Amino acid sequence: MTEPKITELRPMPADWQRALAVVAHPDDLEYGCSAAIATWTDEGREVGYLLASRGEAGIDTLEPAKCGPLREREQRASAAVVGVTQVEFLDHEDGVIEYGTALRRDIAAAIRRQRPELVITLNHRDTWGGIAWNTPDHVAVGRATLDAAGDAGNRWIFPELIEQGLEPWNGVRWVAIAGSASPTHAADASAGLERAVRSLLEHRTYIEALTDEDPETYARGFLTAHAERTAERFGGRPAVAFEVFSR
Ligand SMILES: [Zn+2]
Image (cartoon, rainbow, N blue to C red; front, side, top):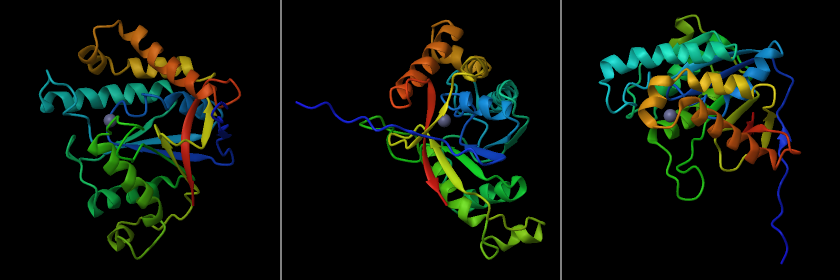
């Protein structure tokens, strides 16, 4: 019997200066992606975050009116740990974010404001691979982000954005999907891993509601296992995997 062939992941594109990461919830980037972001900001690149919701429906024991502001604070602290100061929130409702033109317009507007070459989002597919079902918010935001990268460059789509002074930006060259079951590329996570752990730990209220495990043991265990699985396909280096769509 022959061993299944392991396809090596390619290094992420490096010729860019600005990235925008667009996700549904606080903590979406910290569960796997922020080690790469720490490395990129170390290199002097700019990374901004755009969150479709404040994650207000994410903690069973905390009502949304109290949960939203708390998770927004935790997300800003978490971003600061990996060198990200630009954090914007849209007001889509956590848990029932709808894929559609309203969401595409909001994301396209942010892309026009921030003019990134690289856009990052989270898995837009129905599953995480196999039978692990994804959440509808991730699917909606992931798909809308892939679409909005094109919308941002077309002046005739959402002409109201031009009236608001947001000229088209057709400079997005890649949309990179974190958490994809079919990754194509990876970013070295060695230098950023420790900060990624601290970044995830900033979501302390969420983690404490989620697990009885010590939060630091939990965060380190999760992120290290993730980076080591990717290392098997990236020359043994701990890494963050992405599925990259070129434009
Ligand atoms: Zn999420």
